[in-house]
Amino acid sequence: MAELERFTVSMDRRLLEQFDARNKEHGYDNRSEAIRDLIRKEMVAEEWNAPDGKARVAATVTIVYDHHKFDLARQMVELQHEHGDTVVTTTHVHLDHDNCLEVIILRGESARVQELARRLIAMKGVKHGQGVFTTEGSNIV
Ligand code: NI
Image (cartoon, rainbow, N blue to C red; front, side, top):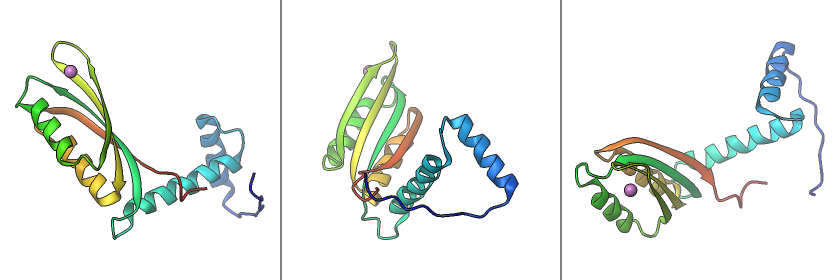
């Protein structure tokens, strides 16, 4: 393990109580891991929000759609082919006769990944779409 550094933080007691209660709810054993996770979360958000849009990132997009609707299945495949350098893989589940669930794993520069995620979610006929925007991990300790 890397060298550990201890530091002291002063804060309003009530805020700390709220933080401790929240951490207990989330299943943290101690404050340190909760604080490390918050810091990492912020660093990942900053990667995504960097103005040049060039940070290397990873994401998953989960969508549910009716494959009978609006020629959507074909358009979905076409859009993914157009962005073959960004789409890592796709998992498709036939939920029932009409509905499909797809998880699309994306990787690349944040601006391109974000744009493709938006376009996938916004496609006409997608009932629900949600992106998880995460990190490739190499810049986060
Ligand atoms: Ni299907």
